[in-house]
Length: 398
Image 1 (spheres, rainbow, N blue to C red):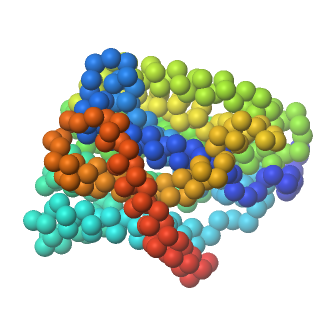
Image 2 (image 1 turned 30 degrees about the vertical axis):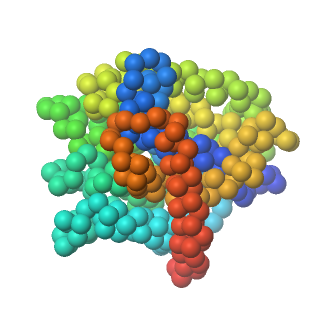
């Protein structure tokens, strides 16, 4: 194909229902991980405890999913000739999607567990703008105030949202230097994303040298490789639909991915099992050293990428992948998954306070069931009365 033309098969555009299922899986994996941590189950000896202790791999899955979904229109604009993404509208929609529900949870958690800091205007500004990751000497213990510790990953997400138009512009400029040929542009995009992915590994070195600075682990550059993995899938998806040649590299990749979803998930499972071993360091004590940190980055990237590939390129027809990830239950859980993420620590602490259990104690399954019910209820209400109404504001900026 010698010129850039728009060739759009019927399935090229629109919503990928299977990705809702991945979002649901990731949100509940984080919930299971946090309940396992609070109950002490993830700290127990044995393979079961080790598997539970690595449930934080769901965060890279979220990051890769964001890279795929948000970079997809940029890649399609460059490779298929779609209309360019309007930055103001994009940023406004991201703000409307993320901030109202997040602000509700911040206010709730501060009122319940951090009343001593209600008059601290700087803390409110820091939390409401999702800048808590950059406070190197906070008054809270761990990654955030009580009930808000998981929001460190949302802070990284928002940084990606803000930087994405700049990243997309830089990648597009680099790709256009290859001419109008779709293949050259796609390959240059993938090469650029490869460079972006290496930023994470370089950042890991910077975290340890000349001295260890643990706060850098929650800064966006460390997670660049996860976003880059999802963005690479967005390139492949756009490439598939930009070139009608069935022998093109992208279409061959799609056929291979669709033909063997189980192989991708098996690789993801094996990488997860390896990540649960001591190769990634001691559980819950931070990253032990440079090598354990590098292994964790690599293995978590493999898990996220291999989980997403079958959902991005599912087999045609009523396949097992679609039955597992795109059924009505998974679609509903995917819709409320943001609320599940936001409220889970609040549900955990409310339940532990109600039952008068001490931290790192209690039966894992006996706690998981009521905490899940509480989280689902709060997430559903938030989706119904906060998230959906907020989306009506999308039309304000076009």
